[in-house]
Amino acid sequence: MTKELLIVGAGGFARETVGAVRAAGGYTLLGFLDDDKALHGTTRGGVEVLGGLDLARQTDARVVVCVGNPRDVTVRRRVVRRLDLPAERYATVVHPSVETGPGCTVGPGSVLLAYAVLTADVTVGAHVAVMPHTVLTHDDAVDDFVTVASGVRLGGGVRVGESAYLGAGALVRQTLTVGAGALVGMGSVVLADVPPGEVWAGNPARCLRGSGRS
Image 1 (tube, rainbow, N blue to C red):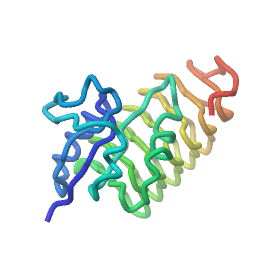
Image 2: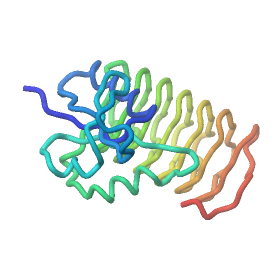
Image 3: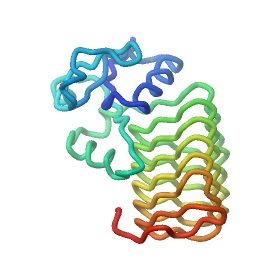
Image 4: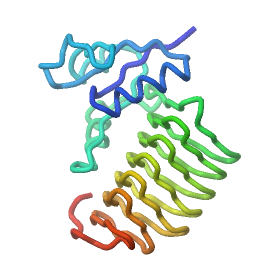
């Protein structure tokens, strides 16, 4: 028997998650929830926007929060805290093409899209967004609410702090730390630790903006 599922958000990430849900099976997708009243009753990618976020508390359906924005790296964390649902209400969505090696764990509410690879002993926290064709290698630790955009590659033993955002195609050298709330720009090559809340970009990546984002 399949379980019912609600997707919070109706933007690009939410619509991408629809494909993963359908490919993986196991859930009956009820629709999107979004606070934009102009979207209520419309369809996005063939899925109806049922109403605002508060509807999640009025049902026993599983929930996955699919909001994210590099200009506001803490938005997913704020939505989850606003919903205040128990951990067991959150679905974990993993596309069937994802490769998960021995010792890897994925927390509740996280989404792993197509062709992501977790090689060995990788820890992915709760409410993490892992976009297509990313590679997380041995002993990486990705904390809650992180966004890992498409094509990111992490060397072994990398630690990514809560609510950090790694832009598309970024490369991070082994054993480094990307601090909580930090933003790494697309295509960046990270060769040094990124402090919490800072914005880094370039090859090699350098600080473009100081802390204050986390």
